Length: 157
Image (tube, rainbow, N blue to C red):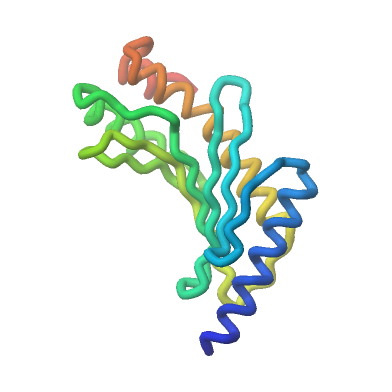
């Protein structure tokens, strides 16, 4: 596929993403040169910050949602085990951990290569991320604080 065609596809996906967020009524910041949007929303138990990039070269829409915490060194391995367990049960996306810096986040991606995409795709990505972050983000924070044990994290549905 030519670079020009890839750019056109990515820009259309980016514009559709922006229209989808507009339709939800969320405020966001745009970086048109980088085909990136970022914004935060308040969940019931956790603030969710979104960074969504439309990647021209890879023909992907990449969503990242960092959890607002730097894990203490003593909890990083425990949280990593919990995230591995969590990832096994997720139908889409995954949690990542940077063991050296203690950063944790959720990510997912959708291909726009030779795909027919609509607002439903982006609505799903946004809503699904909110559900996952509400469910597991608070548990990760509770594990970090020592409010629950690793066993309790893994048992709780």
